[in-house]
Amino acid sequence: MLTRILTSLAGVIVFFAALYAPEGIFAAAIFAVTAIMLGEMYKVLKCSMAVNIAGAVAAALIAGGTLTVMLMPAVIGVVMLYLIVTVVLHGKNNAKDIMAHGFVTVFITLFMCFIIRTMYAFGEFAVLLIFIIAWMTDTGAYFTGYFFGKHKLAEHISPKKTVEGAVGGVLVCVAACVLYRFIIDSIYSDNYEPVVYLAYAGIGFIGSLLAQTGDFIASCIKRDYNIKDYGNILPGHGGLMDRFDSVVFIAPYVYAMVVLMSKIN
Image 1 (cartoon, helix red, strand yellow):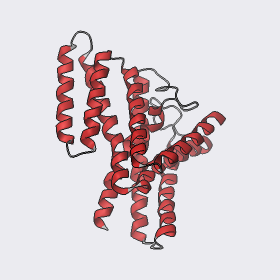
Image 2 (cartoon, rainbow, N blue to C red; image 1 turned 30 degrees about the vertical axis):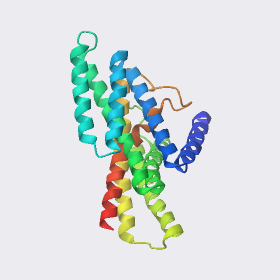
Image 3 (cartoon, helix red, strand yellow; image 1 turned 135 degrees about the vertical axis):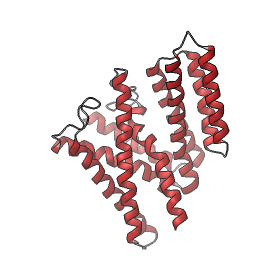
Image 4 (cartoon, rainbow, N blue to C red; image 1 turned 30 degrees about the horizontal axis):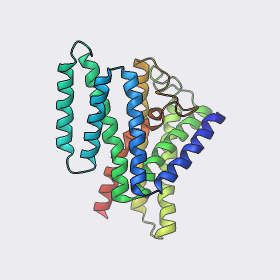
């Protein structure tokens, strides 16, 4: 437990240092995290080096397309790349594994790049909302489940998760999102509009459900490949994929919600 807490504190410090660094440094940090996450997933999938190289090319295309107006050509290029790789490496790599490799590459790279898009479009306060949803859901679910958990939620996927923990994660996340908006208003605007707080509660509610879904998806993969963690880069936590499984799933959702709110206002 102590190791887990100390690693979390170190991670928070590094996160805020990157968040308030120049945008280029922040983007580089997200790219680095994404690259490590892909490496962890590639290790699990156990495809050949040739497929992993194709994955690196595909990730670069998706990242470039997501941060510009060329996403559709990038996606088409990546699909064609993996189809060609499937044919060329037939007999050396299973087609099913290559397709899974391609999906993982696109999913992780595309969704993680929305963190950078959020920063460029709306700044650090919107980016922080992504991580508040992920962190508060995880924290609320962990402690609620630890003290009150009695009913298993999906034991065949994640034996320790409970219904009480899931509900606690949602409630803590909703409260944290509303409190976050209150703090922003208190510091910058003194404009406490009830409809805005209701919107933040809704964002927190759906975001928490998505965050927990992302966690379950990552757990499903681990169960199918019979691994405990995706890596060991974070003492007490595992790999970066173990820590960002919720973040990667909710990043595009938060971006879409912030875009929607900006248009309404």
